[in-house]
Length: 181
Image (cartoon, rainbow, N blue to C red):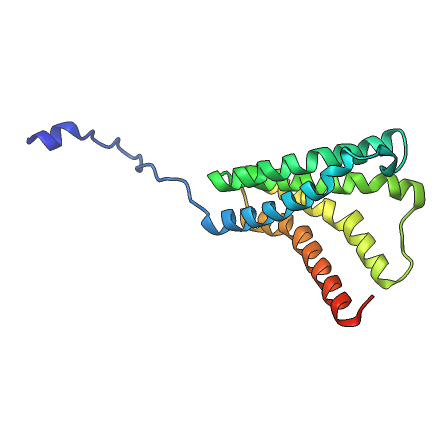
């Protein structure tokens, strides 16, 4: 027996050697991009917390929910970005799912006060998607990532609202530049 054989531990019977965790580079890049967009969105609305608070709609619990959303959105987006950057895909999906749920919760005071807006086909579609579909997508993505299953689908689910928002904003700006205001 030579010295190399003496130093190497013998593998236990019936136990496979440990493999490293999958790197999930594609999911990490997608989550970083979505997290950056959400961070920009959250930081652009954060100055409303430092301005006149009369711009925040409603006193009481409705105003507190909106203020909480404005304060927590950049923090959750930054945590999702950091989790995705260091490889914690599950945690990044959960943080982006929390952003989605907080956004939905910030819509609720307006929905309670004014009801659902179904005045036109686009408003009906947008309202039903934001109030009904997006929270369900967030809950499913959080549940999948908590169980460490279907992380690709969970990433797609938490990315959809951000990408849809980006698409509609881009379409609005293109329409404004081509048609005028």
